[in-house]
Length: 255
Image 1: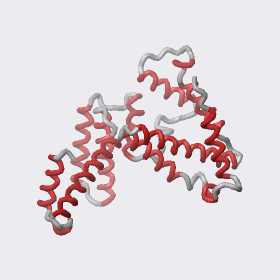
Image 2: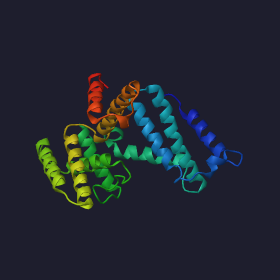
Image 3: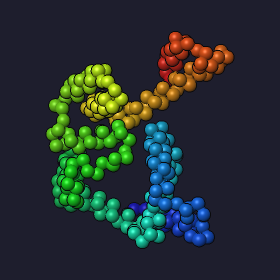
Image 4: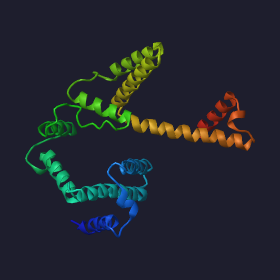
């Protein structure tokens, strides 16, 4: 197996240099809290590279994400909590412990069996509640999907997609009848949660599906703006009918 320690050691040394008295003033001012925004941004840039199947960019973005891990570990080391080696050892031990079918003698024949065994290990590690460990800071659609998946593993689920569809229709009716900001907000959330259930049954990740629709909307709306500009008109001068016609043009062009 290829020795990969050299490149990682170089990165750790670079981080140490940046945080030294002779290093970068900006880096030395950072805290775990101040770096949160960059951790989130880099994670989404990795996702974007994957979505575009751009392997060169994925390599670069994974490096940027790794830098965030190294940065947080270096700060923790200076605070006397842990270092990068501790992080690596912890996750290595976790992977070995949670994969006894690979590193031990346990026989698991399917991915479903693996996931069930994974949840059992989490219980042994001290997690008292099934939904414990799902970060509250996740995007709402992703968090809903993860909660539904965990509940489904213990049988709290619809028998098939038909039940999820009926629940969606029920929630849509309740939203239509809702009055007042609080009730509308609550029923909107219920409707979105029900829609996530349908997506899960259909094998679609709702967060990715919505992002794809966002991108599609942006492309088509940009087409409307460009076509109006060619006519020396702007959005405020165009009628809804004119914009709808341009939207259909964009759609017919595959945008």
